[in-house]
Image 1 (tube, rainbow, N blue to C red):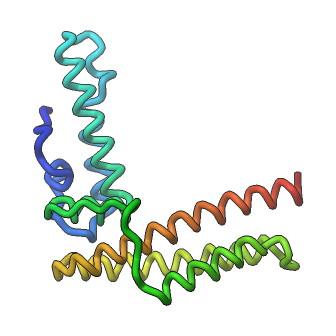
Image 2 (tube, rainbow, N blue to C red):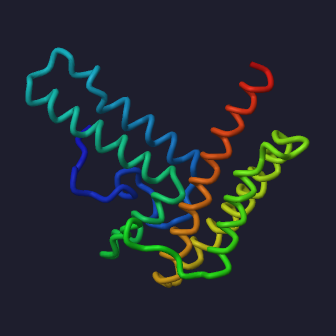
Image 3 (spheres, rainbow, N blue to C red):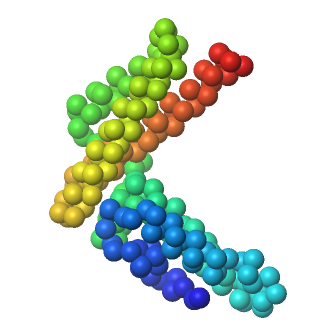
Length: 181
């Protein structure tokens, strides 16, 4: 199997160029393609064939990681329309959301003072999952409608929630170590 290194990630996996994807289909196609191009299959091949295999396997991995992640998939779809999202220089201008960010960060910082900190972290995590799911649905709609400004804003918000989910998981692990050590 030869892969065109210039095709977009959706073409690579023979998926429609859409935010909503069939995850099981993506995973199956990823495994199929990876089996065909994996460098282990080319151990006895020429240097050039091994190099091409490595390039193809790298591209397949990058494409899969991009499409399986909701935030990266949104960013990638925007990039296909010529929009590069530089989160370092951009932030949501939604004042209500920014205020909510501050409240969530304060709640996280004060979690040790709660009677049941692990239960509170579970609630926060569940809330983040519900919000992320709602934003993913909204992002799919905005991308279909080519509402790029709103799509960008949603991606920026999703990045915040994703980072917060990581912090919640890390704090939960720390608390479990302290409590059950």
